[in-house]
Amino acid sequence: MLLGYSTLYPADAIELALPDAAAARALLASKRPDLVESLSDVATRFAGDPRALDAAVLGAARLGLRHGSFGNDQHAYHNETHVLEVGQRRLLRMVEGMGEAAPGPGDVDMLLVFAACHDLRQRETVDVPGPVGGNEAASIAETLRILTACGFDRVADRAQFVAIELMIAGSTFDARPVVVEDPATDELPNIAGGALARGLALWLDSALPRWRADADARRGERLARVAADLDTANVGEDFVQLCETAIRLCREREMRFGRALDRPESAQPCLDFLGVGQERYFHELHRFNSREGERVFGPGKLRNGQRVRETTAAMLAKFEAQGPANGDQVISAFSELTGAR
Image (cartoon, rainbow, N blue to C red):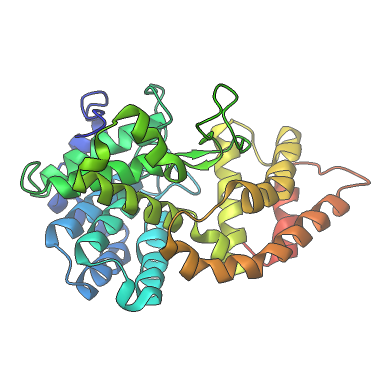
């Protein structure tokens, strides 16, 4: 499609094991029948395209087998449960909260597919030029194949292919500090820091100068901002839910770095992540990208702001005299302070 990632990341063993929605439903029937029920509930509420539901089911099953509880590379955050956080809890809240201004059925279809597919690949070592991450580029390539496997046509349904491509690209999250201006130029703001969706249009202006003449691309860029807000909407959810996602991300991060939570080497990284790291994510890296996201989740973020600061201060105070023995101790302290598990 627009970005050309499809040929860079071929199918892997997981794709071959779950080639279609029927295989995915069979797996989920034995592992997580609630997942199919929940995704179906969202799709039927908004008269969704059955093909989009099939794509979401297939994506969720592959994610669960590749990085979730169905396989051997279990990630604490990027797994099948995150699909329901984004595609059920947050998506329903956004659609219902926007009333008549809510995304239409075709947009909801792709937001549901996004929820299931934007984190499909988490172990990619091959990067692509530009700001899109390797995991996101690989997830795009696989998702486009999923759409085809579920009956979408690249010509007749081009709008949906372009939309999901830009939505997943925009979900690339850069944890580097935000810089207001690129030191190499006085004209282009730096898009580092937070979700790429915020600067996606700017990057497309440079990489694909004619994209604004393409109605499908304009829609895709708009949906990318909405999708990024759903992906990071934990900032505006219940405070305990926000903190629970932080704990899961912390556990996954330590696993990826090979640091056991019961060993001393995980102590300071966990304290950094659950202390000042959470405050930095909340107040510096996160910004709403769409009017939908800010309208629905903005009030919750305002309510959570002071509690995030207070939690950081309490964590630092607890370990000021004596540092934590290991990551488990840090997570336990964070849980006691916030009520999260």
